[in-house]
Image (tube, rainbow, N blue to C red; front, side, top):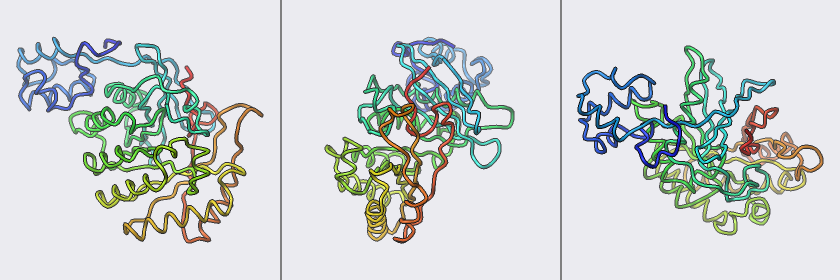
Length: 352
């Protein structure tokens, strides 16, 4: 497979059968067979029922570029695996293989951008700034490379857009990549096993609801107190909490799906009883207005700097969850693995 910038050719792994058919003049049946061959990693010549002229058209216009695997780091404390992947122009992005409860099933945590412009204070990626958006094929290829690390009988069951970058700041390419991932001829991953996580871009949230109504939404809320959220997430200045909440409510009504609200308690910052009460009040109001209860996910903080230089300390997760429960809101404590190889939530920073 060729590696490089795919601007001069059609990256075949980022095309649905419909897109391939219209681009190369194939019949619908031929396009399905070619896409299937691409994602099974077999020679196009093995695709039966495809005319020679059609194969020639695909070869003339298409290629299967890839990302360079710079490193594969396996956690010594749990079954998480991190891949450091280099783009043709030298950016390193990271993807994480996440084990699920059922043996042999995994989720792929993928990046949507090289770096990130949002500068969330508790996220290592936010310190990098934004280099560029990833192309659709670069997003799809992360899942394919995670899949390549699996053994017989194992499979990628789901995808979570919670790696490097803000997915909804690259929404066009993210939507295109998801359509390929869901296509039964391509990666055949159920849309209901996919989650797009955002810091809060209302227009992107609404677009997800319109175009991918089976894909789940995750919202990094940080704090239900606007002044605290603004300190942690500069996006609060451009898109205030109430504006984002309104879009999340629209998404819930349109899709019928409960959104996941993620909060990371930071000691002395957003882990107090006042913070828990504010979050519980926000969740109860959301349920009253939509009839859907948000899934509150409490994510323990993972250090983004070694030693005393780290700006935060992990908040008291148990106390925070108990305070939420006392206010009538049940929360799930998310296990965020792979911290020994900097693969846990908030730690991805393009390290080769």
